[in-house]
Length: 254
Image 1 (cartoon, rainbow, N blue to C red):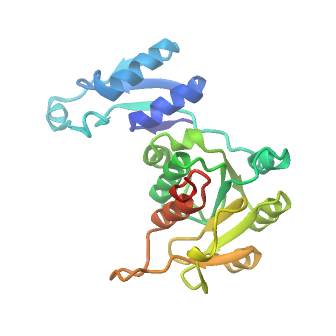
Image 2 (tube, helix red, strand yellow; image 1 turned 120 degrees about the vertical axis):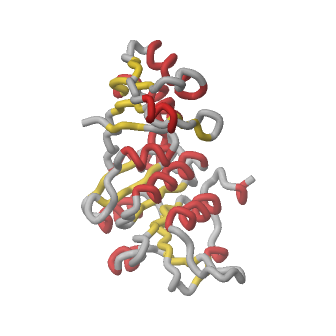
């Protein structure tokens, strides 16, 4: 199985980290420059086929480049999805005592692939050590996730687990503290600091964290509104705020 990736940044990241999994690059006319041109050059250097797609004249007229050539409609690369890591591999550094602090994430039944992709992009930016996703009642890790992540899928190890509760227990055994997020929590996020390894758990877009997940968290906090007319945040935006706050590389730690 392969994914059709449309974001050249996602393809470039795959070419840098696992070129053996990039099967083919398919370019449309006019996309041989800019980022897709760089993708083609890198692919050729690895012996990966680069082919030109034929388009009907009316399609050619509609074709537009966005963000100074970041995406060109119609150009794609066929890339195999990454193989998930084991849960043990995600916490291997902690077992070896290689890092006193760090940040992991767990996504409890996130169902929008755009949210998952955005979370991976932010996680890659802030050096998150790993992400646990649930196999059931979650969005599939598809091409949309990879394209929205814009390379973040290649940078952050992730595990797909059937039993999130057991995964949380394993994180605790490895010395990681677990922080749940809920708009109904009594404590504001400001009550906690990045003084230990944390795993932040982000809940479903509509229902939040499941009951058992909440019960297993060491602490549960909320993001309090600051006077705006909107009283809740998109799951990926809330995750981004938590990542920035608790990552050792976040602005609060500099």
